[in-house]
Length: 237
Image 1 (tube, helix red, strand yellow):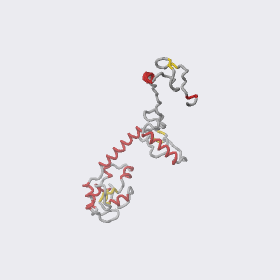
Image 2: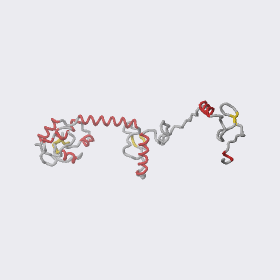
Image 3: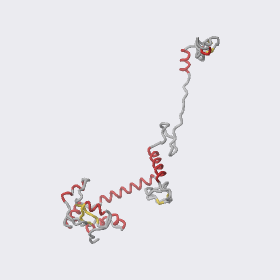
Image 4: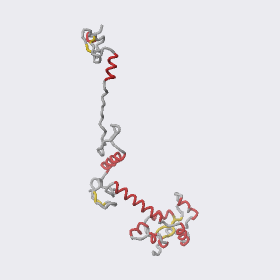
């Protein structure tokens, strides 16, 4: 025999929660239902409780979103914004004062959230419109570049020599420039007055790409020169 507390309480009468019948339990833990059938029937008839879990809230924008409750961000943009904020908080120069600037697209003055040079537009919409205009201008400049026929005339005029270093160019390496892996001594046409400076001076494309503003140059010499107006200066029309 076990202890007194674990013995069946045969002298107590219980009422079944399903059928309402009075019964004496055979075991001490059978104090709710008279049989297994009544217990299963009661559980089937009992409506299930619907637990409504609250939607998770994004820690960056504060909006509710559908997803796992352990997620902290509603989208990849908010996750990237959080990473940028943490990086700026850790490495930013707090001594610099954030000043207002003019939006390049709409022209309105705005104060950026960070004192960074890449904040040139007041909103994402203005930034997209400005990027489209910039890409369109770059495409137009590419179409107005120097043609192959004009470059051949420049090379013939300069005697197939680089006007920056004075050495001969390798004309058999011409195809390497268009292939993406140019040879250092491949022939190119260099702008004596660079295009960036010419645009600041208000030159049009015809004057910028004129033969008087072009000279023969090695690919490596053209790259090293960059946007500096050095080398043999020809007569500018």
